[in-house]
Length: 194
Image (cartoon, rainbow, N blue to C red; front, side, top):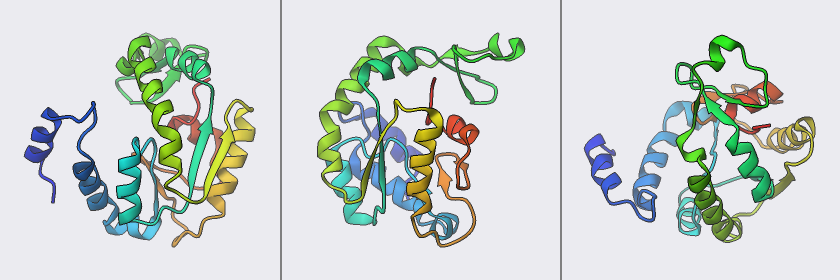
């Protein structure tokens, strides 16, 4: 079992800004071996980030579906520039959305959405993505420049094809969503930033 002190020590020795793959997998495997995930399944977002992580993950668990939302880097940069976080609720908003004034007043820019960090993150992603995807079978690439409804339909259809072991919603990050997924759920999960 991974203890907080181990995590603190490991975070001091980041590998290229990432925790060591072995530690990440230990934490992930510990979580997905819990009864709720074993019975409901889970969806991983933004992991793995390297080919090494992908290979290590594939050795440990069966990844049934990989969905890639393809968006040009320029569009991602523009979307990221407008993202804002409500520190009270953790919800993500976008400057292009109409936000109630009481909420808009407390929104803050997400630190890793600053242009320099975003550019570095995109460069790392673009350098790694094809090597990561080559590790997996069942990769679905979705043109995420299509309308929200089209992207949601394609993504939901892929998820609906999987064999779930229960009628309960799978876990996605810190929340559970049931399919077919609604646009609101997808936005809340961070699938879209207009």
